[in-house]
Amino acid sequence: MKCYLKLLMIAALCISAVASAHSDATGVIKERMDGMNAMAVHSKTVADMFKGKQAFDVIAVRDAADAFVYHGQSMVGQFPDTEFSRTAKPTQALPAIWDDAEAFEQAVQQFIQQSKKLLIAADLTSDQTALKKPFFVATKNCSGCHKRFRQPKR
Amino acid sequence: MKRLWLLLKAILSVTGAILVLAYAVVQHQSKAAVEQLVTEAEQWEGDATKGRYVAVMSGCIACHTDYEGSGLELAGGRAIHTPFGTVYSPNITRDSRTGIGQWTKTDFLIAVKIGMNPNGSHYSPAFPYSAYNRMSTGDLVDLWAWLSNVAPVENLVPDHEVPSVLMSDVSLSLWKSLYFNVTSNWQSESRGEYLVNAAGHCLECHAQRTVLGGIRNKSLDGNSRGPNGQTVPGITAINLAAWSHEDLTFFLEIGMTPDGDFTGGSMTDVVEHSTALLTAEDRASIADYLKSQRNTQ
Image 1 (cartoon, helix red, strand yellow):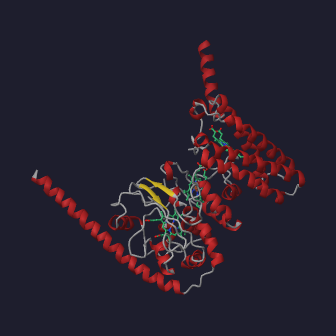
Image 2 (cartoon, rainbow over the protein chains, first blue to last red):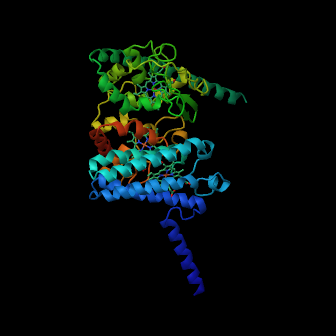
């Protein structure tokens, strides 16, 4: 009986490991990955509205912008220059974050600034077409930063 | 021992004969293709406004600009890491010392469609002329009308860091005889196919390559050893089964995957400097074409 329980627990552990891709991340690496993934959920919601998969709702755009600003500001402290932060699995962070610290800092600040602009735009208008541009400008920072500072996925 | 020596001699002479033959054939075919191109080019008046768009959809600006270094548009110097060494994109502004200031329209067309330098030597396939060979001459004449009026920029580009034997005319002829069909009179079945296979040169990164650096089969199956050691995913209908048409056009516009993550690596440049700047109709044609492709494996 005990043996079955153990097996069951192992099976459950395996399943949960598959369910959340990076559940093995810990500490500051988990923190920043969680932040990134939260932003991805918001990006997807807004993108699905632009793609016509969901009805347009300006509140969702505002929420996304809010989350971008919040997680952008959190990034400032989430990339300390320590051995753990640089190399612990499963990080995809590239050494350039620390070797070219000024450029990384600038990328974070630009992302925050442009997300704030999106936030203001979402307060001023609820017109979908008018919000597309500031959303694109803000999210261009996601790919721009990933290109220089994040290892490709596969 | 003597047998071995004979065998070796036989192998060497056969290899030599193949190389000489390959060289002669490529030289001969190129000459015929050049003559055809020259007559064709005369029928077209270039339109510079259209030419700028052609440059965008073909990625010329992205590859001939060193965004991480000088940032000077079209002035070259961008490093391209290949399994054979590093090559640097040349300066293609009209600067007479460091660029292509002396070039004529014909020189330009021969370089882009046939992969040959004005002095008759061959270019490295890092310059994707195998794809551009399929571009319409009209598009390239437009491109020249624009490019030849871009202000010259003085920028001396580093020499390629590839063993010179690989960059020799004989090696490059052999490569061309294996992987490059200079005489192809290629007609696109659709705008999407043209944008993907000719101008957009998507196969350059999204197709499997042989050890000699040739594209193995013309299928967008993906490449486990892509540029800069990066894995490039397959983008056929099966690979993209979970992507809707809108997911794809949206990706080509801002680089976002359907799960809200953002693409990285060299695809960022393709999106930022090329597909994002296309018309919505052109992005839709690319999506349609990709969704119609089958894997070969």
